[in-house]
Length: 578
Image (cartoon, rainbow, N blue to C red; front, side, top):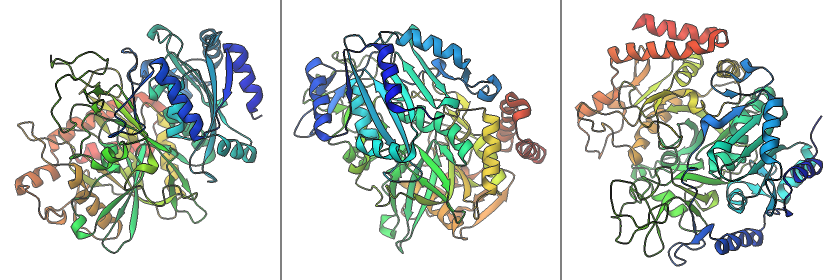
């Protein structure tokens, strides 16, 4: 039986006891009212109105700056269904614990009821959610990141279902912080955090954890993937879905300025973080971007590394935990200009360059996708865009070559399932160690990852022409710790080879780990790249791969009988050949 919206909102009102209840309509006037309220109470600071019109700075609590993975739970009826990839709690226990946290927590506060749509309006692939929150910052951010108001209520009337999410800042105590998902009821409860990944419930909570569970049941995929279109000199556009862990260059790739523009190659942005993948009536894989905005990592973003993102965020944006210049402009490490005298750090204190970063390493910008200078004209097509290639990428300083192609669909699933990435500041914990992050979904899969692998394997069988699958790594280093590949706009050269392979062209050598480009098949015209560096970045180290496969075997062992036989065969074959 589907939950009804108004009775559920009433239940939440009785539980949390807000001073007033406000239903968001998604209008520009409403957004401006939210902003003005936060300017008055200090939640936001206005940035330079000339250089950054309608842009604002938010400083979060220092204990609330990243996803709290250790406090995030998936509550399935059976613990095995959640898998070791998730923290688990029995649904009834989770509900009781959350009710105690939420009881009377909104006294004296406004409860914002936010009906929203994930996906283009009118798309058969879009879904409705409702977030209840006592945070005006969350309400304003949801205005940017989703489609709020009547568009959601209209689709709810048609579909008759929605994903309910209840959020409160509480007192921001880490001891009382908890994020709970009940996939079988499509229910999300988040308490005690204002950070985007924990508080904007349409993002990771709905669009990945709950949606991945829904997708398996309904026959589609919800993935941590950017979507881009690569236009060739003839004007034809080929679309790719690319999975990178957070803070590994996803936004830079999605908004890349091509170094081969003089040859006629151009990137179109469809989405920078999440893709919902469906099979159409002809057996073609199609993707929509369920989001309406970008929640990008600021540090390292500059006019040199990502001019498109810099132009996207120049207006109508909210910056979180960046530094502030005396000219009331945002600044962060990697901004491209030296830190000015009088700079305030992300906590609002004068920065004295004492070894601490001025901006938090996980500081963010939240900007409307429609402002992106290279946003695809098809980014809101209700039927989505056709996907010809799936690319898995991760930050690895050794072992993994610049690019390789899988032998077939099953081998491609193995490449994604065994992917390891060096950890970043996007999640709390140690930075710089290799963590297995299958399909970049380890923190976001809403059910047992062994079953997730099995679903991916079966999904490919339903495709009339499955996309080719590739793995990339821009981050490989030489013995001196220097990057072998320049990255950024030069990555178009790797995508060009992928495009050639999709079109039945592009030379490659068959190796133990997949098809690897020949050195002459990567377009290096105009690059200052030594042939020895290209040879090294395309090579694979057999001894390194022997260690890699042992780590993969160890990682796969946690899935016990849930690990599909096909993946057991893939890893056994690789180990045997090595």
